[in-house]
Length: 146
Length: 146
Image 1 (cartoon, rainbow over the protein chains, first blue to last red):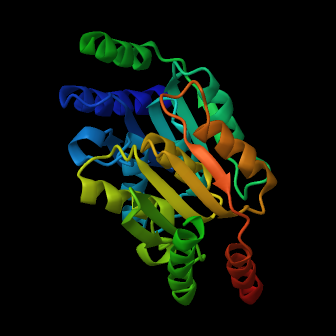
Image 2: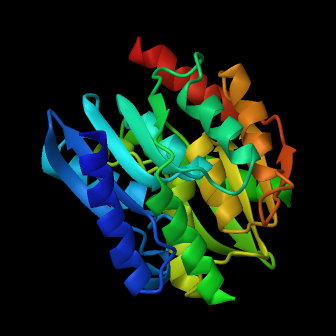
């Protein structure tokens, strides 16, 4: 199951890759149904908020007509940045599955401080899947850029 | 100067208050000119990203036709949440002036880890102004809610 949805998130990342966007994809699932799928579109939209995770959250919110995504889980190919981790805890996700770790070492501690902060009014469960394809797509993208 | 722009940010916060939104306002300044002003509209838009800071960033990005806001400074009435702090460092702001501290103690450390992280590709200067009116508007809002 975990892998099924991560495969879909990876398909989203591939769409971003083809558009010359940093290849990150996200899928939101509730009760084993897909609520939203998205990929990074920062360059195309010229807006820093257009990361895969936030676009998927905006889509899910519209679909469910609620900014509270309590019973939802997110599958994302790459460890979220602090902006997206902040959006994920504020949307009250149940759990996030992360495909690959970021190459910024301090990022994991920061996002754990955000997602699992007992002082905030909601905590999100985190699971790293260490998916090789999720790592490879990012590495390939930046190798080709150089 | 610092106070002049914080007064404008506070006027934005008051607009939010009147709309029954958590009263936070933000102003973006570049070369002593106002580029964008905004206030929290989370309830009205039903989207968690509609915090004052992010709405102001989106407006500034459109106005300057660039997601890089390098020479810009932000004045915000309340200490940003991690989502907004993430958006601020990614937009490459020069400096952020904060009117009042959040009542969530751990928030300051988290946003300092984000805004001043030497591992990220940009760091943002932070100055707390400890403005009493900025504290009062938030306290009043939540007192009236109870």
